[in-house]
Length: 72
Image (cartoon, rainbow, N blue to C red; front, side, top):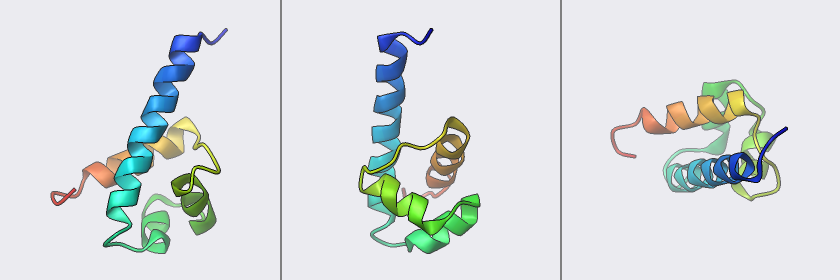
């Protein structure tokens, strides 16, 4: 069973990655970001707008990609 604290941590994590994505999308196209991590552009768009949550594996891949940029 998943505790409320685990859910909250995951939500915070989603929000942190969403904020990084919003920043990065100011200088890099969502299509390019999606291609780099191997997901549809629409998924990145929906996540950025808060319409969708990402699976853990996709979230980790996106977070790793966003953290890999020294200008981030």
